[in-house]
Length: 502
Ligand SMILES: Cc1cc2nc3c(=O)[nH]c(=O)nc-3n(C[C@H](O)[C@H](O)[C@H](O)COP(=O)(O)OP(=O)(O)OC[C@H]3O[C@@H](n4cnc5c(N)ncnc54)[C@H](O)[C@@H]3O)c2cc1C
Image 1 (cartoon, rainbow, N blue to C red):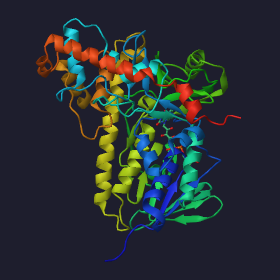
Image 2 (cartoon, rainbow, N blue to C red; image 1 turned 90 degrees about the vertical axis):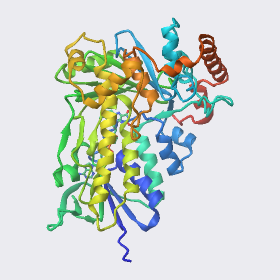
Image 3 (spheres, helix red, strand yellow; image 1 turned 45 degrees about the horizontal axis):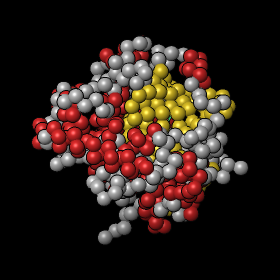
Image 4 (cartoon, rainbow, N blue to C red; image 1 turned 135 degrees about the vertical axis):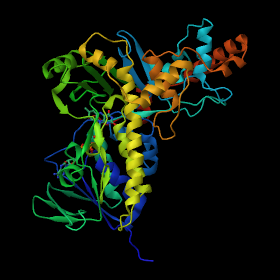
């Protein structure tokens, strides 16, 4: 049998996407494949992307990273969820935590028991039964896999980190695994005339780099997939209208919050990401509903500390490539599409796409079925995340500005309408096996945005009223006990992974 395995992989771009791809592929494919990464310091990276979701811990596991060292070297902090302020209603907030509320009982999701208790007059909120909620608002953090010997899961967590330091950290690992880094600007892409495949890329200083597989991690410009191969872009702005962000760091405040904050404004929202050495802030907005000047003023008026430098404008179009993989080029990261950072999903999508690419790695014959399956899986993944993001904008009582009236009244994909209707009936959810967000995420955001089911599943009636009351009280006792000994988030960092800030 002829060995047609890939020998040369060329990655164009050294932002988070390029270095995740390089680190993971070099680790998993070993020295049999030569990996070259080209990046241009003169062009630089997008420089944002600092909040993550728990799946990143799987990537860390694959890369064999020591978690404390990783947090220390990236000036990181821990994250238990995202606090949404003023989204469903001005003055209201909820925490989309990474954990489940309560405990599922007899294969029925906890929220059905909570809904039944509410119907019987119990006024407790869903979050009164959330371990993550309690720990987050007490500014606590610890590594807790399970609550005692019960079926309640412990703390699921992710990280906040400095994007620049993260790319450097990954670079160190990738280079140690044999990745060759080339500094330089790609100025030309040569295609094979008969097939339209990419043959090589040419650098400004004259060097030519050939490869079997090219990974486009060149950011929003989509140098290979868009500019060279002319693959189009599906624009989703009609559902996710924000198209800009003003970003600025500010002085860090104590205690370090173990969650991201997302505060809705008149024409968008503002993130707040606590790091050890600064707080990252950005106002995501739609420039059809406000001006850059107003957006900047709002950003600066809502900082917790003194700004560090001038706010930087970033522009984007929410959507995705028509094809993520075309010919011998796979786009990963911002070159493949953009879903705004509301649920911190972009770095996860990079990681997930790299993992799918490794699973579906082609031979040099480039059978079209590999690309077709990859494109199917990634498109579906993008669409599921898109629907979840739209939910935050669309299900709102806010009608205090043009922007929110637009979001409230826009027509949304049928897939989301159906999901909301099913939940509104009696709290049911259809779980797509490929959905990144679990039932518990959908429930928290639907309820948090103000979508309350009219009823609950009949199985919740299996408990007598007394049994229900005692079950709910037991859940709260477990949470109280589990949080009793948890350290403060800042103390945990000081003890295990304090960055060297000298
Ligand atoms: C406002 C905003 C907020 C965000 N917040 C989050 C968040 O909280 N969480 C999250 O997960 N994600 C977030 N993201 C997304 C995240 O920033 C990106 O997914 C991530 O940084 C990956 O970017 P990238 O590597 O694809 O592109 P970039 O960082 O733009 O890197 C592109 C690379 O390509 C190189 N390059 C480009 N052209 C050439 C050329 N001609 N020759 C050689 N090299 C070239 C550049 O030098 C650079 O190294 C956010 C994005 C935006 C816009």
